[in-house]
Length: 56
Image (cartoon, rainbow, N blue to C red; front, side, top):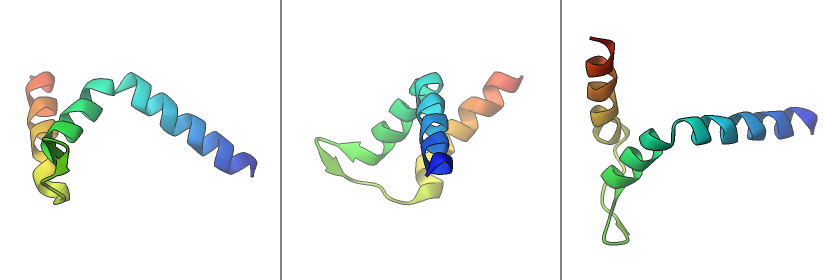
């Protein structure tokens, strides 16, 4: 039970500190209130591009 609570808190922390990434993922998945994309590769491609740009 404690492990579950700690993992939940860690996940919540990751979402709070990566809120921009959460918004990008949701923008890629949802259009006009409907889920339009579920392919993980297609959804994460913009994040990978932004991470590469941020590194340079």
